[in-house]
Length: 639
Image (cartoon, rainbow, N blue to C red; front, top):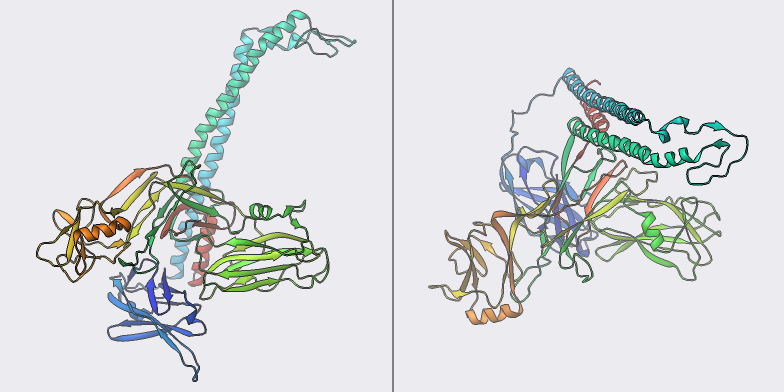
């Protein structure tokens, strides 16, 4: 399980949900994103403090495991990060503040763990898995048998129709319409009189023409019978498939799946919201609350005014060469490569954008050739979100008109950084350029080209997907609805505010408690709201809950209701908080198809990424067995 943290200067913050339980070991991974340049060149350490004991763990690639000592029992611990250099003359140390994290009670305790199973138990387990595979194969064979039965029944139905028509003794349907041979050429006098060496009299020709409707009816009846049986059989196969092929659900963002059954549609998915503020809000410095879903501002769009949540499913290759290269002026050749003519100044384009906010490593491969020797014709570099960049490829001396496979720096290691995009320059000087087989992948072992296989489906909502604390709005494909756990409220000049009797410099307003949950966190664009501080006049911007209502409080020296309302006229207060009871809205959610490839990547191109996507899909039983077999062998069992 991965927990993400952001570090800006000496400030540490949690960028994902945190839920840990005692008894786990080498399971919880902490990833630290250093968003400011002052940490460059420092050796970094995470410090876990619990029960007056501090454990320092060095960071490798800006990540580390939560040490087992912290997880020996339930409770809480503090986490901080410090970095230092090795210079005596210019010594420097940066130390963040501490954040408190909770550990719940886990199932494991000392003495409760069972002993490792004997190898024969592994063999019994594998036998049960193989029996499950046999059942799945039997179901598949049953489906094939049902298909053969359907074919026979359709052919029988067609034969019965033919027999029934023949019983009517329609001349135009009988083979004896063409009655006798003729050695001379014959020119037809009307439609359906064939210009052959056969003789057909006018009467029989007319009969043949009128009977065509019967033969068309027979063909249509046959097609209808087959379609009906095919539809029935397809339903039976889907039922058998849903019972015999295993399903599994994974959660996270972004998602990478390597054991899906190729070509099978995703059976269910849920997209969860997230809310973000880029700073600490105050009344003098309002901070917008951003949530998942991008407002459609194109007035010509049928979705104008709605919030777009695109969900992309693609294979191992994240780069859509067939779409992007033509847009950049490359011309596709017969061998599948793309060609661009030479230019006096280099073409410069963004090759790939990290729209899913992926923070891990990437690998890029492609082939290139030029029309002349000794040309620096293709540069490729990586731009990071902190404004820095690094060169990945710089193709130098190559053999003219020969495919060249750049060998240097195939793996992009974004240590301490987040990739914003991969850019390139090409077609410089007198060298025309060809490229082919471009692949960008998270799979660092990839060595061969795999065509991009993907699609983007759009979900349009009346409001973005929000998240406060552990509660999030989400979209549910299986049930075709959006579930709202978060309420959004706006307070402007016309809102009802009043002074709180007995408390100086304190004004209040209320929301019905049927809409807001007791003691839950809130977010606001103009203040940090702390829940459960009822009647405490030392706090500015509070929420409280009583039997009748939830109370929104504002404390400020010398504040008056009129002055506060005047301020809200130009800077309204927005608050998002937890609903006491979730609301549900029926919507149309598009289906997602799994790619025909060895991998499946799921992401969203929204400005603010979802906190999580739950994905339920068909598993490839062969891949599952391979993984199980490897696990059994690793434990010393026999297969």
